[in-house]
Length: 596
Image 1: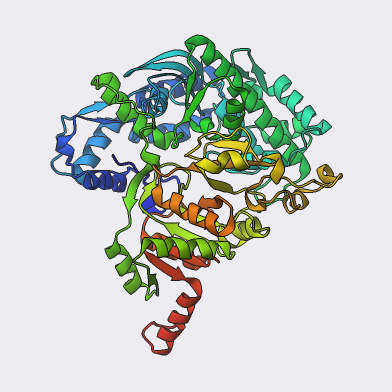
Image 2: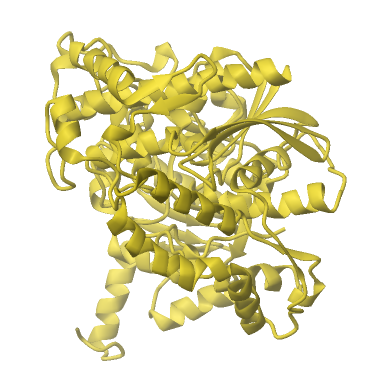
């Protein structure tokens, strides 16, 4: 019915504070009171996690003393008393809350598994969850059937595919728990036929990780510090192993960084596919559900789809810990209370459009508060035609329509849109609008009926969770010495007819857009196709580097004015950047607005 992340309200990325604003939104949207609830559910078991911490410190002692004295005060002060904190905070939000309301704590990986299976369109399915760590589990294989989930196998801490990948995220100069997608985006710049890439893969598999046939792994803890220290790895030891020092955040990205990114991406794909093979063997199912942070690795998901192991794959769009909230609630509903599932041809995520919606009064307030100027387009046909034409003319459009997406991807509700055929668009979007690394790729939103026309191995991917190869007919012939190019030269080589969405390895992370999940966005792309003959657009999240995706009309307008976006569409209002400047100059002259 409703779901939203706290960061979208507070504007603090990865905000870990109690989700007061999210809870208020969910209650208001559903016209509910806390006294109406049968239970409140938290997505893991804090006491079991505490047990894991204590046992880990004990097993590794005397190592980890500094980490122990740093983390224990927070646990003793806060996390051990999570029941009291939940009850106190909910009482502050709604005085009708009954403090005797049932509190439930499903295990972390059961929450992940539930978020994928119970939201899927499958009556039964194999379920694979992979992340950093929950309580003890770092990966799990389960079988879901009807309203029950049976966990079949688990991999336990400290041996973790997610923490292995995050260690390379750290070593290559990105932030752990938020930069993993950057590492995934850097990997295609690695040279597949490079002796260095192959050497890195061999070193990873011989020194860092032992991969078993069933996909389980063993990590050599002498190369990792996340279990006992306040850092991921011993930098000097990794530097000696790979032949170069850890890259700092502001340092130039070189070819050896790209080759190492490709190496760990390749190893991760091997682990995921072997785990999926085991899930297939244990369940015999043709359906697979994926969740956990590693399930956001769209490249691995694409390889899994192309392997043909499963006929159908569903990835929870909020596969990370945010989706654990949905999974916890679904686990309580179906497993604890025994509610029967209603399975349909489509999944239950409603396009992931589960957040707040902007209202006309909110936009009118924005116009007054910021002395903004906008054109009101009362006719939907005019709105779509005008927006599509502006995009076709090379403009970048901020697009805010309907309910906000739940999860890390913008899916046509809080999006920045552009023409995928524009040769300069990737550079413009990264450097002048998103303010992020130039190597980062952009995703295409493509009409579902046209997907096979542009991409090989085309599959329904409404939540942007699959990477697919661009069809040969759209690719350009690369220079003979292409592999020797540096990262910038590779990036700006004319690769395809759709340069803005084609990664350097001719792949793209696709979103298929259908008329049922998001009819307005489908109509917009269809209108764009009438004008240009192309049934897809560049679609990137409406935010700048370091900020969450915009939520409100005000968030969108502030972001729009701080970047080089050309136009902003909120509901039926069209904001022209040039008119904003002209309008403000006029108001300054009339002394309606104070001069800075």
